[in-house]
Image 1: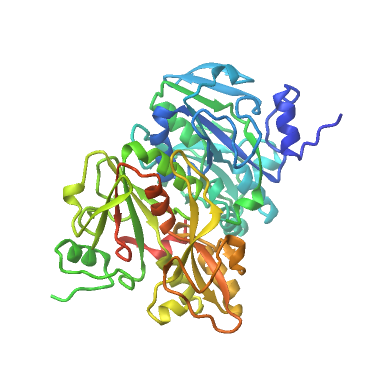
Image 2: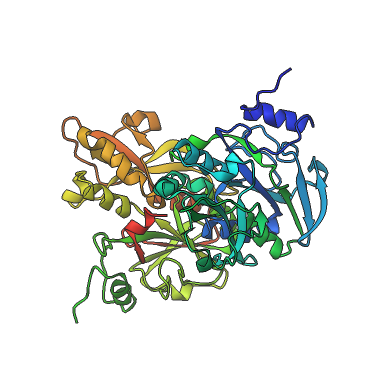
Length: 262
Length: 262
């Protein structure tokens, strides 16, 4: 039995059976992958409002009904407790466990938030002819906490985290227009150029991810990053929270192209 | 003292003082006008989720903090209790009062939802050269409840209400692209052509608003309508709710053009 690594349903079934354990980067490249954040109903209103107020950092794809682990809109029939390779479990904002199956941590009062991710707009940029150094060299992007404050909502507040990609001057306009077509996956850049303007001291020393290589003339371009909602949520020390582990996203049945045609 | 009817702040100040009592259609045409729905915190999570799941019917512009009547993002300094010409007060889904000042009905547990409105995409269509019969003849658009079911959320569920405008065949593509640029104001059409497909029996007998005149070849084009969230909310018979009265929208400080550049 060979596994079709371009098919979301086969991928999720293999993950569920424990037969696929790897990063989801590069898997099912035509389909939207999602960040996962699971919170008790008690915290869900403030988090939903935080996402509504900060759509570039927190592009909501779907919010499940209370207690339901099925994302009925983006992947009907899937199970958010078992269909991700690895989960992180937090109590009071502290990491207490990392598991391949979150079933025993699931509760009737949990709400799952699925948020768009950069894979979608990166594919659009590459298809538009934009060269991305980190993809060509199999590295992570570079990420920083910035001095851009998110709009607070209830107990949730904190700085925006951004990802940075060096862009050739001739590709700059294309990088903007190609990513802007995907508001469901962070959309257009939040900043272009001088890193100091958004509080970044050293462009060669990211807070997360890998340093990027600049060719002469390359311009640093910054997008809102899906790390923001997780960082903000954990900062508020919610009693309980589940997230995906870094690099292990939830693979949906929604085509990337569908996000650009709403 | 002459009043500048293109300036949102002057308009809101005049409304607050009781000096301007008229429909807001045509006022401050470059600025976003908003539908208002105010609910107790108890119902706010389900309503916020309903809006998230039905963005074409319920394009959220802003959700205020609990108890706050100030829309800090779209009109800082404004007061949602006094800056609309007329309000409707509902108890258990039943209209109990219509007032020019909602201050005495305001409570510390209320959350105000501001939702985009069709004025924004109509202006974009007109500026693109699309002719709109109802504007040229100072009529309302035609509206119907359809057989398109909204995605339910908690206690909120019901059919989508649509508005219809007859569009000349040569204008059809422009009508789609011009409105699609404004997802914050209902965005692209939800249906084009055969009314029966979405459960509309007689295109000349709208459920709300005015019948439209078709020239030979005109195509009926349907957009999600801001009446949907109000109708759905009232259907669930919330203990308390405040809305604007029909035609009396909240005038924001946000330029229409800003909604197309996110």
